[in-house]
Image 1 (tube, rainbow, N blue to C red):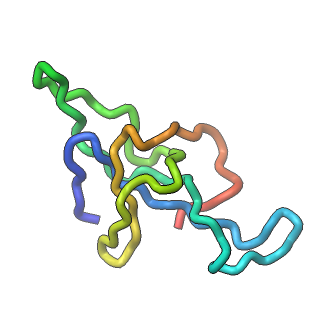
Image 2 (cartoon, rainbow, N blue to C red):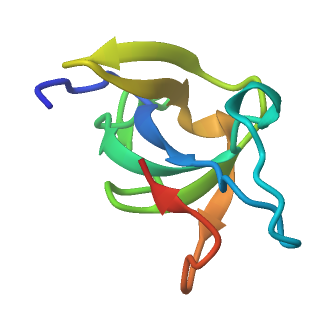
Length: 104
């Protein structure tokens, strides 16, 4: 991917939703909710402070994050779907094993 976000924006790849429920019921695509979890693909250099200095972001490429259901703008880059959002739209970084979902 050849895309570099500006300022305090991040590019997120949404994780794929699970196709089966815990009880083994297959969930069709039409009723699945979009996951609110993703992986940071690229980050901008940071926001400018009132003094003009660049303040670095707290997230880096490869971090697993949670974000709001309606956060970000959906874009297609090289045929793949991504979300572009500000760092302030992120709710937090997920640490540890990620057994429930896999990156698309």
